[in-house]
Amino acid sequence: MPARRLTMRKTREILRLRLGEKLAVRSVAQSVRCSPATVCDCLLRAKVAGLSWPLPEDLTDESL
Image 1: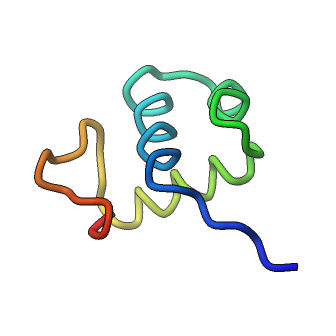
Image 2: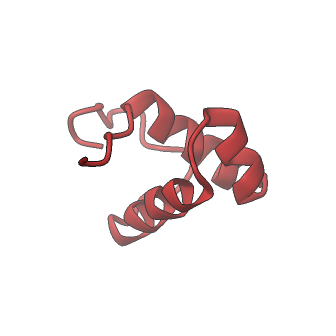
């Protein structure tokens, strides 16, 4: 069965909690109800894309 995609709301929340609030990966995972591996994957993708917190205000969900 293929993995379900994260919603943009969850992606933004992961970035906010980890990069903005400096929470541990496990705490972020519990907060957004996903696995710690999913949080790490999301953070890695953001790093590769050159994203940092706070996100630019003109960044749309489609761009993200």
